[in-house]
Amino acid sequence: MKSVLSTKKLSFSQRELLLNAGMSLVEYNAIKIDFIDFKAPSEIDKAIITSQNSVNAIQNANIKIQNCYCVGEKTKALLEKNGQNVVKMTEYASELAPYLVENHRNDHFYFFCGNLRSDVIPSALNENNVSFEEIKVYNTSLQPKTIKRQFDAIMFFSPSGVRSYFKENKTEALAVCIGITTASEAKNYTDHVVVSNATIIESVIAKTVKMLQT
Image 1: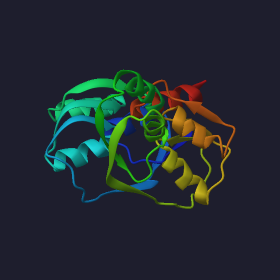
Image 2: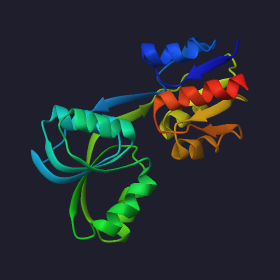
Image 3: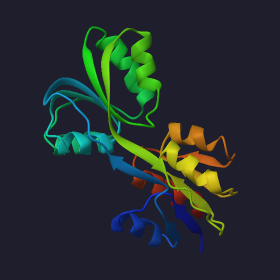
């Protein structure tokens, strides 16, 4: 039986996808998210949101956004579920940044993010003199854990999750990553890296199953 380690605790339906494929599963949370107090207007014209954690923070603060520019299908879905208007969604920050520069050079944005956010969007906006205000709404902390057994595949869902795992461990297992940004981080530690077809957890699971069954 092929064995899989998930660096994020999965939902029941997500676990079933692996178990029904005949895989054994161990899971833990490699990172911890803590929401923090922040100040922002209750009504905002344009906002940049790159994670579901930011969406939850915005929702908890009862902020209404007229135009959301976001990264990721799940982020978009959660924004729309909460009644926010999504104008533009891309799979990666590296795709959203040039869009904002090209189409919104004279606009002002609020960028809701975590303490370990990627520098891709802020750098692009600064370099092109696009006005924005960065608001940190949560902290991500690493939760390193020594894993004594070996696995056939390890699923990674963020660059910080990769750093957390490899802080205490080495592995020859296949690293299955949720996107190119996470994969780029994993390549700092291992040569055995593949990327999911979409930036959602279910796609990581599907890629893992496919790789281990071939």
